[in-house]
Image (tube, rainbow, N blue to C red; front, side, top):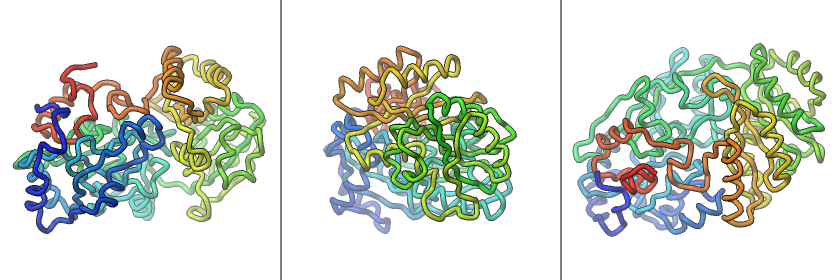
Length: 457
């Protein structure tokens, strides 16, 4: 395989590619191309600096699978790198092209092919909110969605996401059974359409568009409940954490979201200021209305106070608590203070509370504690998306190193290498699959250390 690092904007003929794609929408206007070459990597001051000026030569926006096949064939023939893009809501620079070429905008492939009881099949550009609205008409909904569900596409979520609202019940996308099938197009002069089912979907799941162009997705659905949204406040942070874990283990209480926030964070939630007094720690919850009575008992047990409730009938009205959780927390905070950044941390399941308390006390207001309570491989886990008062890169690396030395896994959002994110290592079978689907090393080149160096690091 040609190493991705050998690609450069001058090593291909972009005009020849454009001429071979007559009839397909091609965007060349510089402002639009620049906009569609970006994502939310700007949450990181490190990536903002490293990815400055990285733009595609053109954006190609196919309308259907046949046009995707035509683009893939042309890119392979002319050896033009391709970076696949959904809505661009990722945070690692996944859809920022390092070596120019084509950004392949998949947002016009937006057909819901079918929705059946407990399962749906759809094209890669379908928005998650659109699928949910459609599925809920039949009594079902997506198992999990990121906080960007209003704009994110299903293909982008599979390629660049990991979990979200709903992960308290169903874990992460990588948990067995959360993706039924993926259809991908290979980047060859005669592209193939490959259907991956069962465990084979992991060859493409969260692979940042390195291993084929996702064109269709088949996913299992969850029963749709009437969901209520609640804010619960506490006087003590660790009590808030213990409440969140107790709720997670209360299997009889049907829930969809448990977000835990230290008192320093709600100041950035403008819509919630009336419900979270200063110096109060908060849990943002989405719970089935049928479970509210039991939830109130648990809140009382931990000394909390419910200050806000939105009934299910008001879903879609006003603000959404889901859009204050996961990385929307970071978005709200940075809207008020653009110097803030964040970490993505996974605290070990053993000695969990003690370690969380240590980090909370050790860093104080420099690292503001935000936890999401989920199930991962069947175990209740508390990944963190802590807000950080950024001073310089050296200090940020010290904070990361301190966490890692104490057994906290960091999915580093300040690196564009896939191996420094959730996929700490690229499995050999995935590399073999890449050789098959991308023989010229044209897909999102430069995003894997192994493919740049040819060796594991």
